[in-house]
Each structure stands twice: as C-alpha cells, then as structure tokens.
Length: 235
Image (cartoon, rainbow, N blue to C red; front, side):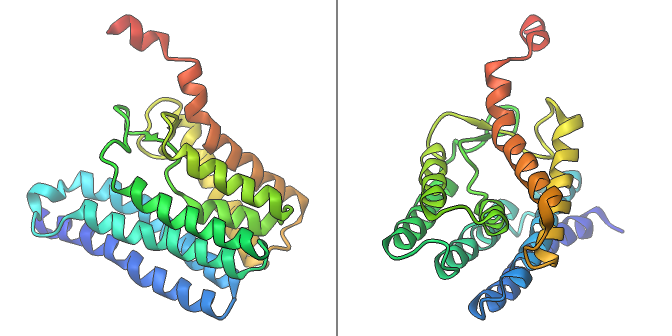
C-alpha cells in the first residue's frame, strides 16, 4: 500500500474514537456505566495505537490535509474528559454541590490544559496530570470511596494539571519503558475486567487497578526525584 494511504488510514483510525465516544455517551445517558466504560476502554486502546502509526507513516508529510494532533485532541476531550465527567456527576458518587464542583473543575481545567502548548516534556512525557479522567473515574467507580475522598482526588488532580510535575506516557517515555508499557497493559486488563463484571471485580482486580493507577501517577514524579545519571554524564 502507498505510504500516503497508510498515513490516511492512521488519521481515519483516530477519527473512530469520536464514534466510540458517541457509543459511550449513549450508554451514559441511560446510566449503563459498565457498557459506557467498556466503550471508553476500547477508545483508549485505539488512542494507544493510532499515535505510533501516525509517527510511523509520518502523517504530517504524507497526508497533511488532516491535522492529526487536532483530531486527537478533539477525540481525547470527548473520551478522556467530557463523558467521564458526566458519568461522575450522574452516578450519585458525589452528592449535591460536590458534583457541581467536580464537573466544573474537570471540564474547565481540562480544556485549558489541552490548549497548553507546554503539555509535553522533552522526553515526550506529560507536564502536569494529562487529564486522563476516563481512567480516574473508572477507578472511582470500581473502588467507590467516600464522596469527600473523590472530591479531594478531583481537586488535587485538577491542580496538578498546572504544576510542573512529570507524568509518564505509556508508549513514548523511554525511561523505564520496559515497565511503563506492561503496567499500562495491566491497567487496561484490570479496567476491562472491572467494567465487564459491572464493578463486582473482587479484591485482587480492585487492588491491581489501584496499584497500576498509582504507578502511572507517580512514576514520572519518581523519575524527576531520581534523575538518570547516565544521561547527565553523556550530556
């Protein structure tokens, strides 16, 4: 196949995320949270595949008609932010005014973060929490902590979007890639299992979901606390 059409196929794969997001939203409106998250997990898998394909086929040069970065941001805002925020608000996990604070913080903070040109670091990690609310809300549905814990998590993560804290990218952060990617795959496994059984996942899966989530949240910060000395010697 011509490289140009391979580049186009990468763009078209990214665009399927909008359809998957619509499927998820249709389930969310009916408060079918398990199916909603299953669609969001599929969208997350597509998001993990389309980026490497776009770079491999050099889409900016081989099919420059479409802006893959813009397309990805539009789809990500739907599946990472808008739908999970709606689910958190409607689920009853946050009563009264706490739900309003959460939904405003998530949607408003995330749209500003997505527009920030400094959101990526030199090593292709994220600067600040990358607004992965689809992952956060799924874990909250699985663990069901008290509402004040949920609200605290939402506020803290919203603030960290605008702090100079590093968060690893599962496929692009080279340092510790040998563990970042398997942990991300593990998170997908636990998340899929949890949603599949309608969040009656059991202790092992629940703690697996918590452990992998904590690693993905803290690995980048740990890299900053313990810099790679070999790179410093080379530079």
